[in-house]
Image (cartoon, helix red, strand yellow):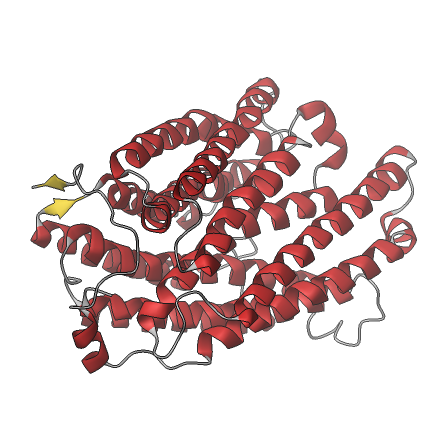
Length: 463
């Protein structure tokens, strides 16, 4: 670690790990409700636990993105963070907002807009926190007078994520209009600007883990950003199929959403070839596992499983079924959760004391149990979803009768989710088992040689 202010990242990652663990609790609770009986039905029904589960995912991944940014920007701009105090105030406000939202959901305080359930006062807090964050990062870059394409793509993705949250502040009485604009936030986040954030963080990791040429990596980033904007923006239309909008959205959504996996496939191929050229020789092999794993699982979960049911003639049967849950779990985990876990694994030897760079056996158990567990969960959702489509939408069986006939798949889901949760618990325990570095230790480490392969900086831009 070259800059003292990079230690901010540890506390963001620590909050993210706590929220990750809480998300798993509510995920297992939600999955168990498929089997019944449900003793918590009156206090925590399915809709509440599912809303908390999905909102916790968004909050902990965003917390991880912020922590990663506070680690990356000082190195890229070669400067301390503009205001460390502001970064900690931001983290406290963000955490309090998240806790308030969860407690509020339990007691029915919600806006009722799926995945944007935050009541209006909490939405205002989110906007203020994002403005504080962007101000701090942009002032850091301005004061340094130096930025790189890698951090430019990362910060642009975060800035667009903040801008695209603005439609969520407006309430519409018409349900179709409300759904139409809701996807401006949700879709353009997860299939648009969040991919820019993922691309920026993966570029940072690949440059340091493989020694890949920065100039080549940044050209690849331009291609990814171009493909994301070309396919991702109009690909929003695949959410408009059956919500009451004109029919011309069907071919637009089908064509452009089918193109979305191209950027993901390009990302995975470049990561593979970059690592192959380096010979996988970086001492932090655990971070290499998470980085490569993220690109592979992104292609599987977001690309392959998304492509499988995005075409209108298929989606008219699968829309809103467990097939959607299959795609959602694989895509979010591969593209965003694993990217954050890769950044945590790379930075942890620098942020904590007495930790081996190459990682421990606990770290590798955590990796493989999570990968196997999530793969099993997507298969469980997928097979249950196929059965649901056939029984409910083709044969016309009732919803509850269909659910009863899918019990074996839900047992598979609970079993594989337990494997995943065990792997995640090991990762979280591995994170907290050593203390963060003290300021004195950080000062002494600034003169120590970096273990990462030498990175080329010839394309950095000086202001």
